Image (tube, rainbow, N blue to C red; front, side, top):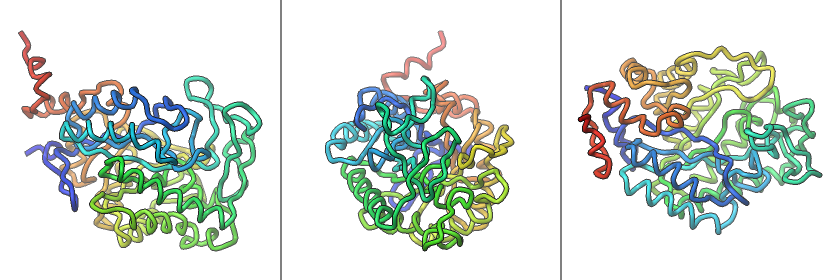
Length: 356
């Protein structure tokens, strides 16, 4: 039996296979509103039979966007188009998910295919960024404003109301983005967070912001599955590490988080990452073994055989794939063919199986 094409039961949902589309920013929104691009982009993966599809980082506030073209869910008007997207994904047998995010000090940037540079607050499409401390990501960046405790609580509420809108929009997986050097990760990392109040210094204090977000979001969920994406390590001396990630996971699991989406890096520019096939998989494996939580492995997973080996070796419960889906939106069918699985295609595409 090929594990990649077995179902994955969650508490209230079941993935039809263990291939999940990873969140991938498209930088194609206006004022946070999803467009037909997002419908077609995400919809193609549902037609291709991905088990679940996690929508790109969707900001809980205007200032939380990485760029001015990011998706948002900070106002009720955003829900209408998002609902159309989730309805289509479900109609194809896939599970729609959304990643709720705030970029913190890495916000207010230009689209990556233009420059990626941060835009100053006094420039068009720029704004004042915020962070746990006033340390910029890059020496050329505008210094972020250190959040007050009152502002932190407003952001916790922003995540909660964003989750409420996500539920109304029909998302069945709610993922909190606590990775890649964005705001929640900024609180976790001692390389970024130099606060001396109850949100800084100790491990318990640095995880407090995420813990409060989880408690708030959990209150508005009904049958939705709650996931968290973390960076398991900062890849930098003195930074957030796999040991702390494991301890954090135990806390998150006790609070009702069902799945941990395990990535790494992104916190600081001096990180030293050793990349290669499966380079992040050991982090997912260690967390899975030490905590028992369902884990997803990510990063340079390119083939069905590679994904199958990860699952057969009990290194993760499923795989999340990003760039390979951009190269091949029908990756699921390719992986099935590679593994000798007769995958049922969408009826409209069945004749594509004919080779003569």
